[in-house]
Image 1 (cartoon, rainbow, N blue to C red):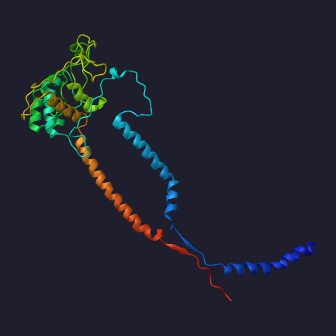
Image 2 (image 1 turned 45 degrees about the vertical axis):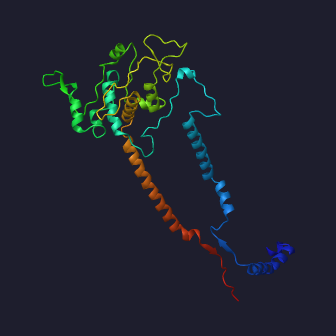
Image 3 (image 1 turned 180 degrees about the vertical axis):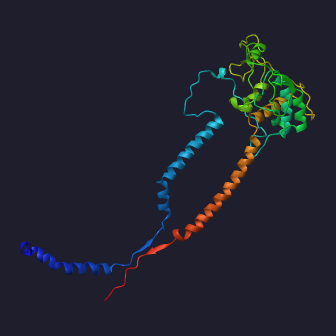
Length: 332
């Protein structure tokens, strides 16, 4: 078998020991290699962050948040056209923003205003508008005491039954009953209001664009129509209502109610109080939600600080360690 190999192959094999010794000698003459695991310059760290997905996600969140913040402040975006089915006059005048006492992150409802607002609702608004989602018990601890709410509920007769004889009967109201509607059904409500259906006010603040600002502006915005504006019979001019013509007449006038605490019952004061009451009715959990949110922010902020400290304490030895390669000692 060796006879078949060319002579050049045998010469190459003979030259291998010298080549191997040259390679090993060169390896021994190389300097020792030293590695640093995480030591890097600030520029390389910035470049790695800029090219990472975290930078892309952060830029996206910043852009979307900026657009949402601008749209929340001004309502529209300057570089995107909008198409509306109605003209600005048909949409109604945009209401101004009012400094509500409960609009801040750490602000709660003015409960004295809620109590006065319920009085305005009971004496003025309840004649036409229902409040189907609010029970008597919801008022306890918010605007009235238990005894006051029980007394108000017992003034209303509710149909209950059947009794042992199978007959329906009338009984005084209880805390678990809901506030009574002004009409027995929708048809009766339309018949009493010229065909218009008075909306339920339980969620009216959440159901209208502009919220509390819109309701307040609507209640205080009645005025004489401008020259050339025609109002049909039975309608009233209000620039804040879509179409500027509303079937509900003005209902708030100075001195219409007499507040228990002596607050002057001006038109704007009554509108402010009833809007505060309706805002509470739309979100009765408002105060508790803000309390819970504040507790959650404090708790998670503390946990975040602890987690960052523990992470830095545990990973500091690993992050700052240095790996050094020491070749084995030469053997003679």
